[in-house]
Amino acid sequence: MKIVALVITLLFGISMKHEGHKTAHDFTVEKIDGSKLDLSTFKGKPILIVNTASKCGYTKQYKSLQSLHEAYGDKLIIIGFPANNYMGQEPGNNKEIAEFCSANYGVTFEMAAKVSVKGKDQHALFSWLCGEHNPDFEGDIKWNFEKFLIGKDGHLKRRWRSDVDPEDAKIKEAIDKEL
View 1: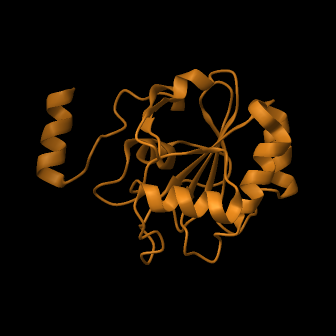
View 2: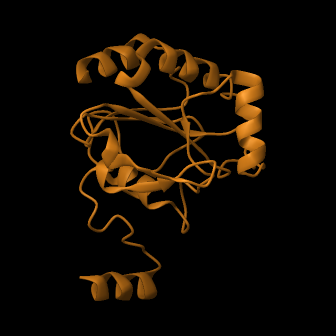
View 3: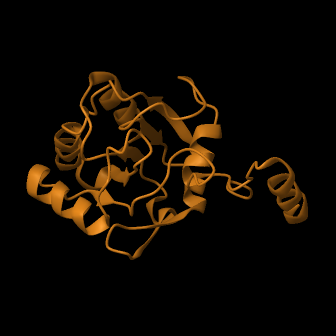
């Protein structure tokens, strides 16, 4: 299978990065401080994954994400993934992003290292997320602050576009259903 994936990648430029990943729990990501975060440690808890940016019209959603983090405590895992895929709205490095989030929004939820969420260098987790079936919509991320709710079983349960605030009643209802 690895040879097939390599041939497809070489011939067509299509990566099969999510090969072997059946749930979000199969991924380990780099945290913003450089350490590793094994998502399997969150089995039994819902995870809200959000692609973030510091210079976006939706950046104020950091406040809502922090509020959710404080309201749910360790029952819900929130992970922000800074990405610079949309009009250069996340130009900083990991240290600058961490300082921005802390100073401006008091962020204490998990923050991953800066990644790419679309294109040829798309992080494997986002390749998997964008390819998973869910009741809302599928496909590429359209902008910063899209939200993905992973259930306790590691499967994608719901997805929301950027314009849905993290504290929206429909997001809270979906989280409560997963608790």
